[in-house]
Image 1: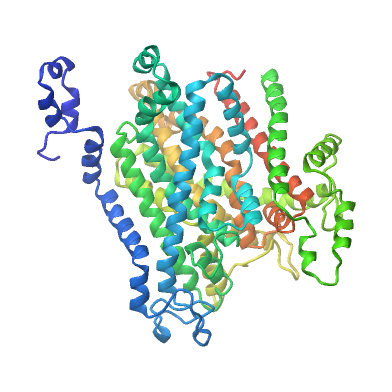
Image 2: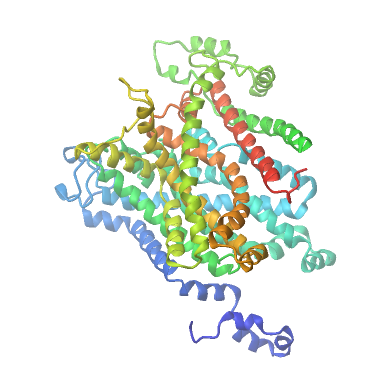
Length: 313
Length: 322
């Protein structure tokens, strides 16, 4: 344990003692909720290591033009004479694909697409889920009934089937793909948020706000939203890796972002046809997806333990 | 209990209508028809295509067609596949057993490994074994399943053959020549089962571990230990029986994701099942077949949820379902 006074001591002090203290003193001595969360997170070695890996991967994707300069290849130029080179062959550090494009360069550019889809997909999913969950939980009655029946319907379809249906019909780019993912996977989040709102709705401070005449939208945004934010953050950190894997599934079925624009998923799909002659081309993008999703999950779990210590054991 | 089942079965009707309406609408909001790819053929006149579409009734507004489809469904008629005029129900029943075989085997495979893992990890809470299982759990559920399936094929059916080791078949349900006996079928089932089940192990063992931990912290366990019961008896006949209950519901709830996973795995292994059929139906814009497969997936999911809830009520007398 660190020498620093643990946050538990601060919160465990009797409330009367706190009231007696001058306000500015209290602000200095008791760090805020998120600060305490960060302090707990920092002590979690596994989560911190994973966070560093995630940052490195993001930098790798952001630095794609730099990688392109270093390797001397673009992500789209074909070199058919050198197709399917093994790693290290013909000047390709990680080998080349069936069109002779450099795997390493495509990996960096593909990371941009995969991470963007994962990020925007998660944002879209949580935005839909949060909006509908807040509304259902706060208004209750028939509004709640309608939204929750819709959730039941959505949950009764294997979501991947719906995703295949929609993306095969629209042939989406990455923005649309992210939106579609959001539109399909929101029900779980809506349920989560609704449950939380139901437990908050009848708290005294909400009732007080209502009595004073604060409009509903303001109660939802000012009073309910900050209280569901921790769950939302945890949910987001656990959703991002699942969307990265999802992108690879959709791409494998040939329905994601289309070549020559690389994504980790469509690199996997393209290479799958040539696994007999060149299995490293399947292995490398898949490993990249795996490392990314694994470290993101570990960060998410660390975040959950840090923000909601009740949930960890 | 009887009334509960009847009410849930009745509730399935509006849910089914909702699911099918959504699918039908989505499918028809997009321009095109099963004959769209004929348009690129210069030797087929647009008027012929229009006539073909008229024959299938595709020129009428989709809500009308939806109501008709629903009417046919009430009479147990799922229509005929628009591609080859085979009744949809025949095409589904031809491949449904394959999917059920794959998903059930994968489910059993993952539970058989995950249950002991979770129970043991909880029994030795915070030991190295527990920490290891925890990490392995995350490591398993972060695996991209498409990658896992292809890499298994690369290793066990391709590289093993290259190295002269006994290899496993990469695709299909039986060998094309001289296959079909039990051993052959089992060999074909191994890789798809592992691909589908391995990731599930992570999910199940995490659930079992946490519900075991909860059970182990309850008063009746303390009582059992105070009475001097053997550790194994406490673990298995007291704690596990209680931890097992939420598992029943979770298995029921996991059915859609299991089917979803099967779509991918069937496509990797050319496993002739519902997933492959659904993919093919979507690709060919075979409206009736898409509706049939979606309906089948939805009904199976709802039935699984219902069975899970009923079982929960039967197994746990404290829970009253009504």
